[in-house]
Length: 79
Image (cartoon, rainbow, N blue to C red; front, side):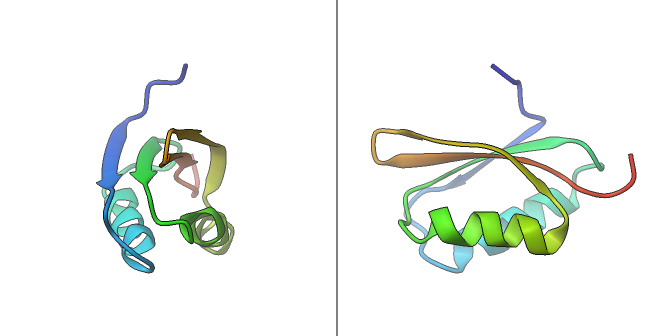
């Protein structure tokens, strides 16, 4: 299992807050670093992939742990 460079707990937040928090958290990371985000908003399965595609980030993996969605996002940009 990949060890992320940063974590974001977006549990209890509804659209668009998980994506806005992810954008802010990713801005502090260097290109190529990985953010592990957990969310429980059902819309996140649509919003996070769209956010990654629009922002030039890579959605490495999406999976669930019970009702919690886990997203591994690699920050885009020049490495």
